[in-house]
Image (cartoon, rainbow, N blue to C red; front, top):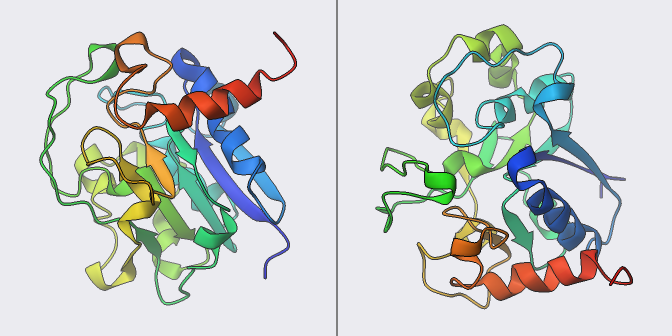
Length: 225
């Protein structure tokens, strides 16, 4: 087993509490050390965001993960609006050296045309595939993912993993990226993804599967009341 797990997490200051709650949910259940890599825009000195679309600040920086890992080893990328319900080492154990990436291959039509902060929520091919990525950073096909390359590609190309052959995109069980509200409640969900809105926003505070997020939030604040 690896000595540590590297976990790149999307960070957006507008919902910074979501990042900390997610990290809390990881740490308290992990059986091996986890090295967190927050993808905060101000820290990515070699990458300048030039895309003008997107609902969060890490929508494209997630594709920098292999570059930030020096194209070596493995890493996980996860959106910050998640909660982990099990040991993250269980996901880490699913690594397949034959694959360049492994993702949950969602096939759904959204129930909501708007999401948090009034952002548009449109349907498109491979929607939410890139919100949880098990990255084989050493895979030769991922070596194209330099800052310049990412800056020059449209979102559709990146989020559909168009630089890869389909055979290099491995599949993870859906419980590893379970979409709250979009999917039915699932007590067996391993990573709950609040894709329409983290329960830190009042409009989503009491929506489906929000309790898991609030439970983790309460442990972040434990002892500070």
